[in-house]
Image: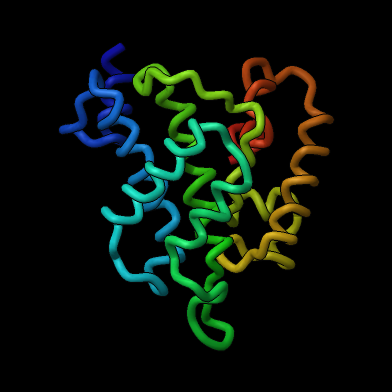
Length: 185
C-alpha cells in the first residue's frame, strides 16, 4: 500500500490531495501536458495553466467521452496554423494535441479510483510517441510531433489490428487502443 501511495504521489505531486477528484483530474492533465512538451517546448509558449484549464473545459463539455473531436478542439489551443515552426524544425498542432489528449486519458485511467467519474475508456486511442512508432515499425516514416490527422488514423488502425491479435490482456480489453500503450511502452 505505501509503495503504491509513494508512486502515486511521485507522479501527481506530493501536495496533490488524493481525496479531491478535481485536483487529481487537473494533475492528470498537467502531467500529460508535460509529456507533450518533450517536443512541444521548442515551439509553443509556456502558457501551461491556461491550456490545461481549457483542455479540462473541453473534456467536461464532452462529458469525458473520448472522441477525435476532443483532439480537434485541443488543436486550437496551439494556435491557428497546423505547422508550428519553420523548415524541417516544426511540430504540428495535431501531433501535440493527440499526445496531450491521449496521455490525459491514460492518466485518467491510471488514477480512475481518485477521479470518481464514470469514464468509458473503450474508444480511447493510443498516444503516439517514438516508442509506440518504433514498436509499429513506423518510426522511420512518422514522428509523433509532426503527425497529421491522416497519418494518425493510419497508426491507430494498425494498433487496432495488432490488438486484435493479442490473446489474454484482461482488463485492457476495455480501454480501446489505449491498451497498446500499456502493452508496449
